[in-house]
Structure formats: C-alpha cells, structure tokens
Length: 471
Image 1 (cartoon, rainbow, N blue to C red):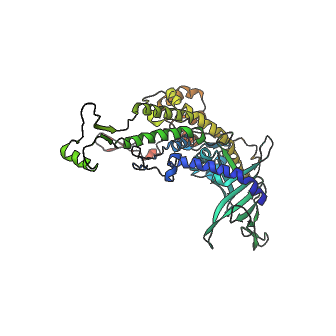
Image 2 (cartoon, rainbow, N blue to C red):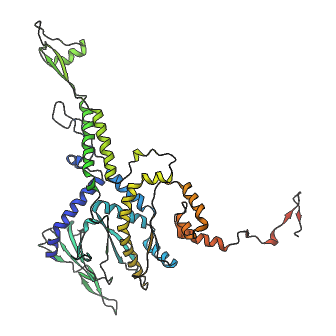
C-alpha cells in the first residue's frame, strides 16, 4: 500500500492542482487577485509611483457563469429513466431520490471543473441502496493498460479529524471488485502508515455477536462501487479552453479602472517658480488663483505645465468587446448581455443555443453510460433478473427558452399520425411524460359525460323555482 500511494501521488497532485485552479476561477478568485489572497478589491493607492498609484484587482466571474449555464441547461430537469417496465421505473425513480436533479447538477459542475466527477454507492444499515457524490480530488483511479481501459482499483484519500489530538490525519481507502482496505497516515511521506483495524466491525453470522474489528471489508458488489462521470474523452476541465481570454479581460479591465483612478493625479511642472517654498504653492493657488513665476525676458522658458494620463478609451473598449466575444465562442456558451431577440422563431432560438447545445450534448453522451451503470447497480440490488441485459432508455430535457406556440402547433398537426407516448414526450407543457400517460389513461377510464351525480337526485325546477317531478 505504501508503494502504491507513492506511485500514484504525482498523478494525484497534478490532478488536484488543476482542479483547484478551476475551483479558484469558479469562486471568482482569478489569477488577477493572487496578490490579494483571492479577494477582489479596489486599491486606488496600492503602488508607490507618482503617476501610477492605483492597483485595483477585480476578477470577472465568467467561468462560474459558463459552468452553471451548462449545468442548468442540461440537468435542471433530471432525465427520465425507462426500462420498459412501469413498476420497475417507479422503483428506480424512488431509489434515485427526489434530489436526483440536484445531484446530477453537481456532477456536471464537478466534471466541468475537474474533467471527471465520481459517484460512490453502498448499502446502508437498513439494507437500502444509497449513493453520493465524492469530491473529485479524493479519487485516484487505476485503469488497465489495454484498449478497454477497465477500472481495476480506486484509491480514495481524504482527511479525518482525530478527536483526541485535534489534528487531521489522512485516510487511504483501496477499493477493488471484492474488498476495501483502509489505512491512515499522519504525514504525506507515509513513514507512519498504519492499518485502521478498528474501521469495520466483525460479527458472528450465527449469533450476531460482535467479534472484533478489521481494516478490510467485503462489499459483495462484484465490481468497484465507484462510477466516473467524465466531461469529455480526455477528462479535461473546461477552464483551460478559455483561461487565457479571462486573464486578458481581467488585465485590460483592471488597467482601465487603474487609469480612471490615476487620471485624477495631476503633477504640476513649474519652471522658475518665484516662491521660496513649494508648500506655498497650494496656498497661493487657493487665495489668488494664480502662480508667481520669475521671467528674465525674451526667450525665457518660465511657465507651468502639467503631467496627466491619457486613457485610450476606444481601443480598450474594442479590446474588451473582442475578448468577451471570443471567450463565449471558445467556451461554447451564451452571452446574456447579447440576448436581444424578441418573438424569435423556434429556429432562431435553436441557433442562439447551438454552441451550448453542442457542449451539453457531448457531456450528455458521456454521462449516459455512467448513468446506465448506476441504474444497473440499483437493479442488481433489487434482484432484477437479467439486469445486465435490460435496455435502458434515457430522455434528457433541456431547460431553455423556446417558442411553445410553435411546438404546440407542430404537435397538433402530427397528432393523428403519432402515438400517445410520442405526443406526451413532445408536449411543451408536460414535464413528466410518464405521469402524463398515466393521467391520460385515468381520463379515458372515466365516462366524460358522467358528472358523478345520481340521476334520482337531480331535481328540475320551473321558472318560479318550484320543484317539478322528474319525467
């Protein structure tokens, strides 16, 4: 285990550093704020220079906007899982939980920042299937070297607090397809690596009595209970596609702000000043609105000049606009300040979302296999026969502005030639097409002309309001 930790440390450290850089930009701690310990703040008197005193460092939060934009577009509405069995569909939906959309949203954010997100599943003490999102920095996968790239093992390292000493120590879990083995260490060089023999209790299967404890647990899943959700083929974070453009924007913007502060700094240049002390200058200007200068005649260069800073406003505005436009193109996002479309057709709206849709579709394609693996793990826990062979259908719904009237018109035109299921899936006012199908079946069972009253209870009245005998 010590050798394994040492061999995987360089890759793990590189991954964590890259992930942390993405997190810094996600939390608006861009490189421009490094001198301020990650805090965006203005500082008009930050430098000891006569004309260039301002040192403002305010970071732009483009990365968080772009990441949350994709997460909201792709994962606000959780994908509908269909294994062609209504009862099993409902059980899977219940096991995934009411907050499945929030977990999926977090997976998209983690994958965008780290290149890959991780889900760990287990069976709790009540024999219920549970799953949770593991911070990407804790997981170091070990794959086979063949083309299948099979997951052979997982190293998970995280911090725990020792209540006796008040200090943290590192916990190292080693997972394979049969067991998990747990170690701990106080330092990063692993000289004091120890087995955590008190981690898992051991029980007598016949009596249920506790016999002791161990650092090894058999999980009986038949596979490693960790599922990766990669962002792309190379598991590359989104930030590094456009980090340079964000840094350029920050530098130009803050240089602009610095110039606005520094332009208020005016230095007077006096030639042959007639006063005895320079300190008299301010009082003289305030009282006489004039300055006393010595002049020796023709050709004398006595006078007053001033040093100021010229701000190239047009050039900087142009550079900011170009940089921002290139940033949203490279990041495959939508610039919210450039959304000036009113009453747009469905085609125009799709064009607006085309870059974001391309990025989201790529993420969805990699997430589909991972989600299938999670669903199969749930079906295995349910003792579903042939859980490996069942076909799993996923329907992902985008959260975007769309022309509902056009969608409804299209549905009305093809309704006579389409199945009820297809209509329910395409209906713009329906969020859960399976629930819509159930409601439609319930409506068809009931007599549409039956108002629920007993005919004997219906009493007719004449124009004066008096009861008339039923015919």
